[in-house]
Image (cartoon, rainbow, N blue to C red; front, top):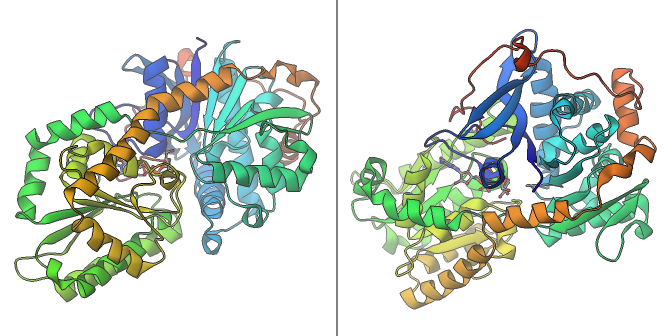
Length: 513
Ligand code: GDG
């Protein structure tokens, strides 16, 4: 098989016990299965001059990383990616901020990704680009002459056209996606959103009967590839967790009370405020559970530089304080709220120890925690998953207790139902979900996407294409001709000029995106 080149905003170097967020879980699994090269931002913001690319090998995998300048970090990462695309694609228009300057930086950083990538590519590489930070990367790679098969996977939802059109550059970005050979989405809802946008922007004739899109001189396949989890690894880790110190301490701290668990990056899309309200409502309306349950919410901080995240953090501190103030006794703390990163093995053990998982995002591309919770259960005595119908995972895990996360009292009722559900019913629901996540685990996801990409008609004919709107826009923003390939970056670690730095995932500095 061809070499795999994965490109994502942030490269997450494998580290023993390290936390791997949603995207990193998938990319790392693909790298481990196929070998190859992972290219992306180091996670470092350079104070002065930005260097070239840093190459390193870890666990027999190759990584090529580079730093961002402060202006790039602000405009591309905090600004357009996480201040415009993330909220918009999750239907949070109140948090959506658009700035043409940030968009220009987003485009120029995408071009820098291409600058670093093109010199490293081999003729028959399969290139797999991940997520919303890099929507126009395919177009940038093509503009620099890349003829390899290019695939793109969107980990987050694709919005309906009524929302997507609020982005002033929606047409340009949609057209940029056509530079790929294969575009993948988490659910059929996301694919439908993409198709709707294609029909609105390019006309209904652009949508072919098999779901491919033909427009702007390109043809691209578009399909659904729901991401999965490593079921076997989670089963092993969760079963072995009782031997770990972290697990023993957590369980000892429960004093025999039943555990309700939530695990989420601290993000407004995860519905944490509403979840805390639901738990408070549950304690108020079902007092028979007092002293018998503990709700542990693990919520490591993320994107702390984006204003909306500071707001949500304060709201959660208030909500947990209010619930504990209202219901706690000297010998019972109803909510334990941790802004901490828990090691993976212990986390899988916590999931197994829990009687109920509250996975109630207001919007989520998939939500791996829901699948991890199912995989981690003891098949003889499984816990119950309370799952938001607005998470992509709800499309597959249909025997979870599905809830609307905005309906706080309904979530409280579901929690009560889950805690008192008889074992035969729990097993029946669990077995149905297990069959789904086994049949579509992380390995199946990787295999299906890469087979799809390998089978795509190659992008070799692109030389004949007219420059796309995006390459013209890039040219405008940098004063360069769209048709002129850019010289590879001069500084490379192989020449010894690049500054060498070991990059680690710091648990407190956004290991995910
Ligand atoms: C994006 C999309 C999509 C969380 N806390 C800790 C920890 N985690 C791990 C979980 C899980 C991952 O992080 C989170 O994945 P999610 O899927 O829940 O959410 P996002 O990070 O928003 O991921 C999402 C995903 O990409 C994949 O396509 O499902 O919809 O938003 O694996 O276990 N891991 C450790 N300690 C923690 O404290 N070790």
